Length: 225
Length: 258
Image (cartoon, rainbow over all chains, first blue to last red; front, side, top):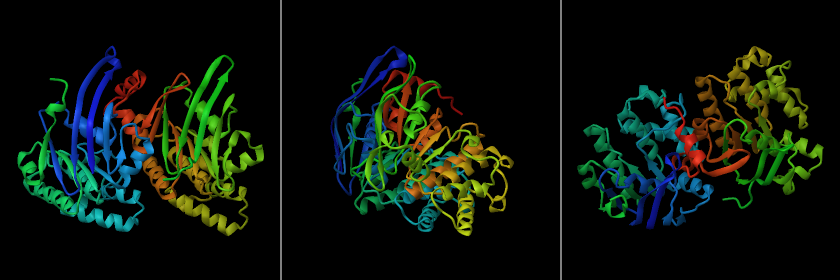
């Protein structure tokens, strides 16, 4: 479901005299349906960079990335938009939302974009929020003022509300307590069981061992050594 | 995915004497897409919007719109009455200043109803009902249907302008700094409203703004303009997170963090 072949990435820093910074070359990996693959490597080795190229917010400067058969290198915006709507899900470390929108609607939004009835979408959002131990008195409030751990769980609820066939998880268990960490690991295992292809970054070794079928060390792709 | 763009802008150039307004601008907008255009004052973004919406006559280029009745047509080659009809039905234009898009001496209900009457609605009861319905959708208390826009706050006026524009069920909306001049708290509410309407109505939109936070939340795609030219375009988060052009990098790195 994810096929990364010989991918290269560089940054040109125009604000710093046009310095060219090659960061990655020859990156290759695959993730099959029903499989969870963990990215490993030291900070700065390029785990997030690789993940962002698969999500499409970093440009691919060489090679090919196929997600569910769609080529992302040089892709038209509209094919990436369509891919993200129904096929490719992403749990990022940052919650970016319109201020003042209630948590329940923030979580339900991906389903509304798919044309699902608002009441049904909010119902599914409520179930996930309850499962992730977000007290229901918070559901009508905007998550912008929530704690880091609460915002993280809102992101996870958004990321798991639809059965995306391909999922990217960037540190999904960071800043969570033991009980919530267990809920998230269960959600990941359930997504695998339904056949999702999952690529994740887990600094938490226990979490990685619990959900990953194998790991790919990105150090070999880095050209910053 | 559709094979026909809703709007195809081809090589638009507009000069003011020796000065370039915008030049060589081309893009396709697909059904349901929201495109943001950013750039500093004087970058040509408003000139471009004016050329697309028919408020300005470009020196050269084509603006091809996929009409309901006869498929893709060059809007610039249409006769004036035809273009005006398009402006009242399938197109909408939201001005930065609601005073430019509203009739300040006409009631709120009248402002919304007027656009319906312009496309042939005659039944008073139905017009009033549609107006009330739209006031609710943009979160204006229907008890204020007979009040004049000048009695409204800036945020309410902007929502009324949106209701007036969307009541005829357009397919394409042009917006010029729709959240400019509003308090940030009012801006947030308007952004949420616009996002919901775009999704529910399957609207396509072109939004001109200088606010990168607004485009990140509202636009699928982004075009960056400088000195009348498009210097970079692509997926909104790709342009903002991995800008390629020197000017875009400067723009992104100049945003103040709160």
